Length: 93
Image (cartoon, rainbow, N blue to C red; front, side):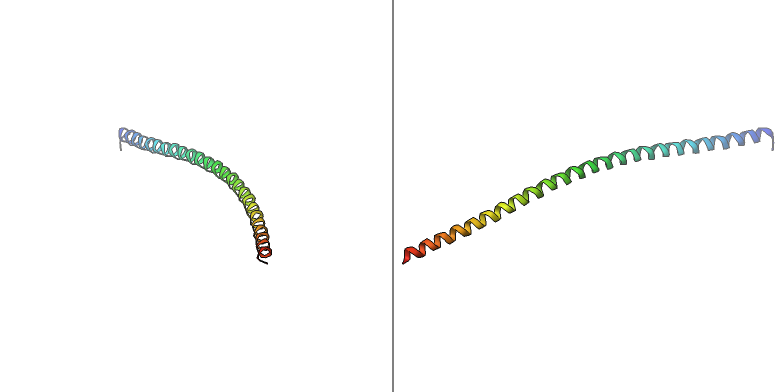
């Protein structure tokens, strides 16, 4: 093989290696950008989860207050019903 053939072959191999390197760099850059996007999404989801957990805690507290109020009202109604029945029973005599 002549020196010109060897040089041309070497240049072709160098060009192929450079093309492969450019492709690899492009892929790495794209995967790095995708990773950054995923990190941003994870951060947003984490913030949403935290906010939703706080909202859920507040709703649970409000439900507990409403449940206690409901029980108190039910007890008062039962007492009032008992008083009315007692009064009606006395008036029937």
